[in-house]
Amino acid sequence: MANLRDAAMTSKAWPFEEARALLKRYEKAPPEKGHVLFETGYGPSGLPHIGTFGEVLRTTMIRRAFEVISDIPTRLICFSDDLDGMRKVPDNVPNQELLHANVQKPLTSVPDPFGEFESFGHHNNAMLRRFLDTFGFEYEFYSATEFYGDGRFDETLMRACECYDDIMAVMLKSLREERQQTYSIFLPIHPETGRVLYVPIKHVDAKEGTITFDDETGREWTLPVTGGNVKFQWKPDFGARWAALDVDFEMYGKDHSTNTPIYDRICEILGGRKPNHFTYELFLDEEGQKISKSKGNGLTIDEWLSYAATESLSYFMYQKPKTAKRMHWDVIPKMVDEYHQQLRAYPDQDEKAKLNNPVYHIHGHDVPASTLTVPFAMLLNLASVSGAEDRAAMWGFINRYAPDASPEANPDLDAAAGFAVRYYQDHVKPTRQFRLPTDQERAALENLIAALKDEKVALDAIAQKNADAGKADEPLPEVNYADDEFLQSVVFAIGKNHGFEPLRAWFSCLYEVLLGATQGPRFGGFIALYGVEETIALIEAALKGELAT
Image (tube, rainbow, N blue to C red; front, top):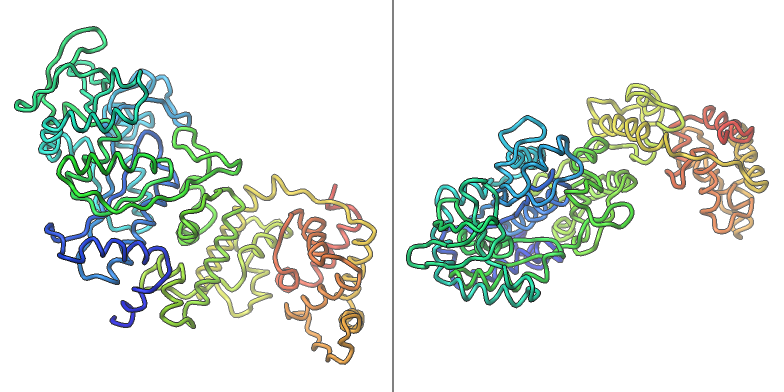
């Protein structure tokens, strides 16, 4: 453990860098509350999206890293601001009229448009928790409705009454003049309509802990700020929550970064200590637009998990959190294969390299072995050319390539075969486009057919490639049409001999003419997996124009 901690104290992996910064927070004395508190926030105004998941995952990675370098206990709270008024009806949910009739009511007072839970807020909270539980996160769930209603926020709300002018001064600096005239840090919940009101506050009584305001009809009300009658505006809510819970760490998206000084100062005014922060770049959809809960653009967690295992999504989230990421379908196969590459590398790495390996931050000390012996990208292309309808059909090809593999011994491979079929049917088949070969490509493809039929043609191709490279004396490989390395040598040689410059133009031809795709697997491995005779038939069909039509 000592060696691990020493390595962690110098690791350049971003979770360890953030963990070391957090440890400095308590270098003089441990926290009086007895633990370090991590928090993530969730605004349940729409269905939870993949960015929400990423926030909890990345916070968990930093929490795990902290636990390696420190013996101070930790907690993680996922806080849902479900007392917030529903300002806009999401586009991607049913019963729009029902929701429009309840605009501005707290999300936990809005009827569930799905008819499954007591409110829309409860529905979205349940969705979030289901997503988080799928990944095995250790967290405590806090509902703002309960937090305000059962009195846990009362002390902070009373303190806010006492410091009202100071907090307002912080907020007013950030607002336009028109907004300044009506702004208040408090949002009363109307006793009769139940709506969250954005109205000016006429008077704040710090001693009594009440606010006085006129509703939209001009009727005057006085309400206690405690007991769930009043909530904070969202910016003051950040700082107030940090102060009330004594939060030590919270991360959020770049869109919050300009508000950080506001959150911090309000926390300090209310008697708290500002937490450590981590600002991550935003998630974008395929068009480069920010992913939005209300728009429903971008991939959802359920959509990702329909085509790949959970770990591939965790791997995606680990990568460069301070760089904006586009999330679209083509990302999934790449993440699957990269994740398993890292898994295979992990056992042979030294302690330092292991701590820098993303799989350590996904799995902690219990990093599994990969049983994916065929790359996911290759499985996708196999599903495409074979027209596979289920994973059983895929295994007929897989066992030709890896005769010792089985669904029982290779669960990763078995799952990936099923995912590949589904991904192909849903996202490759509807969009793939084959093209006819050029004259240069046709000659090369005919040469490849000949080489797959006759070992002399194959060896002659490799010999010619060697001679052109000034390596005529280099020994030729042993002929083995079941060996992907031999097949790759043949494919490579034919591309060189037919003058493809750069050589990737040859492989682009293979993918576009034979697979109807812009990219694909290592082609020698694909031939070994799909079968030599089957590949010959595929090329012949392409040369006849049957694939392109």
